Image (cartoon, rainbow, N blue to C red):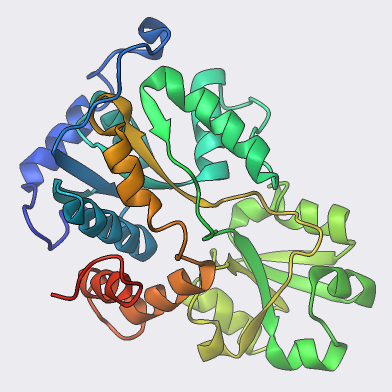
Length: 322
């Protein structure tokens, strides 16, 4: 995808995004030179919020902007679809706030600090994951705010008719059924410990093949719908499963990592209590089901992310109706 700014409020020109790409790896202090962070957290009143460019990230960025504006901040949003670009920009202060996912971001920072072969630090244990994430983020001048209730994890779905026929509600049920399973997923699923190997080891599921149709793609879901495959790798906030006659099987043994939604901020610019309190208001209301519903409104109903975000926050009385 091209780097495009979102259609909301003050927009960044495309040239500004190109500048991000050109300078993200060279601006700001390197990790080796940062040392212990002792300066007080900053409280800039003009904040740039980054989105990773997919629907859910766009929605979260829009909600962050609306909540921060309600708290007296001026905001703009830019979409930078590559973490290799937006994370250094977050460190340098070109971006001030980004919605992230706890376990995924912890493992990404860990690989950046310790090499691609470093043992993962993200896990199904949210407390342990957050501790590791904050330890990795702090030396980079980043503050990880508290996670809420919403989580976007890998998840596995089967046809509702298949689940009914074999009395399946959980992944453990599928393992006990001793059924051969073709899994529609990304080709990396063959090796990833939380995909095919984990399903076999943790649940005893007989994965006879991985059909490389991608994660939660239309083609992957159609393959399960028509019986070509028996299960598809998707996410817990996939709002289109009903359209394909699919249902999720519960991850009852907690194979998947704790990918709870967390705001990550540049401490020197947005580490204040004002930012923390404004964004923390979302933690008490936003659920995984809420995110799935909002994703559906954007992806299936073709509503604008800004409109969906505003309507949701108004319905929860987090911002006034306008």
